[in-house]
Length: 141
Image (cartoon, rainbow, N blue to C red):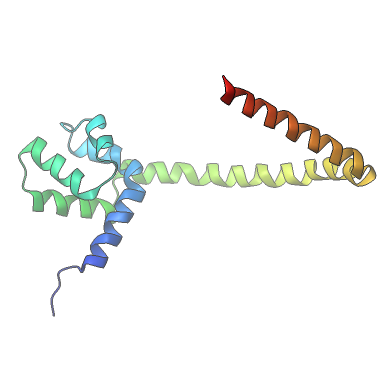
């Protein structure tokens, strides 16, 4: 049985690499400082382009760089892990704030709308016309 990855697995890996590219850039730059941020951004997260960029900048074998980047994807560096750990409490905090906002603001908005539905509809239509006029007015100039 052949242990080489199939084309579908390669495509899936390349897509995962592209999806995580922004979080991997700091670790890539830490490991390969000769590669500039602008050069990495120019690759648009293409795995093959990043491999060739790193290999050409540091006179490394393409297969070696490929393996190192695959390892990086499977075992993120300390900076990537700490960044992810930092985001978790912020995400929880944001969810709590949204829940609080929903529970306090919704009743304040729903009550007047239920009491005067025609007025609420007229205000919404007026705001829509105003926003539409502002948007189309910017296109005419």
